[in-house]
Length: 321
Image (cartoon, rainbow, N blue to C red; front, side, top):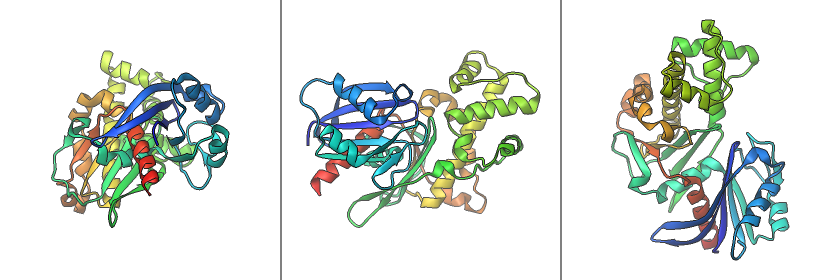
């Protein structure tokens, strides 16, 4: 099957790589390239750009992890305006095998292949080796998936959990939710994601009569960590606590005694502030189910491209069937 192509495509970046082999459970990635999703009118155009960049033999198989539900042959992405047919892509590029899967399904599929140095422990606990594992991650959007034990192997359960209703837990969160509800439905992703941080900042500023506004989450990071702006610092704290609420909700839904794994691009870049935040308290605050949450460990995925590993493992499983 080697070399094969894997990709992790979100609303901001499209990351491509070739898998050249697997030794001792470790997939070898080479010819890595990051492209800007928004600069391409279609998935096919983006894929062709990558194929034009690589050297050596062309891959005959590909697995693409992407932000959005994958149901049937036709794929419509969530945070970038791309629509494509898996069958048509396979035929156009001459792949023997081509498949698309949800990016957090790929992330979940990577978990059994990660090593200790790919993870940072955020909350200590005792994982049940046979217990389900929950995967949650804020990035451009908010991804949710699970890994549950099957008869002979782990089974990936993808979903669109980032679009469940936002669960405000504090007066400030409730004020933000009330303001945003004037525009309609408020999902978790609307506040617990990169664009969600922008919504948090601008909503709180409006509530407080503060004229400050931002257009990108990176502006909030600069205001908070470089300028110690009080509103930006509050936004980060509410964001971290919101991640705690979502992660614990998902842990309850999946009975995730095997642990919770946090992915996405935001948390690893702000790990020290995250560790000092109210995340753990919010994660464990589940009323009569607090005892259930007490011993569930939480890990932060540090591997730079775990979805690529998950996509490579997905292809490997297809070839072994």
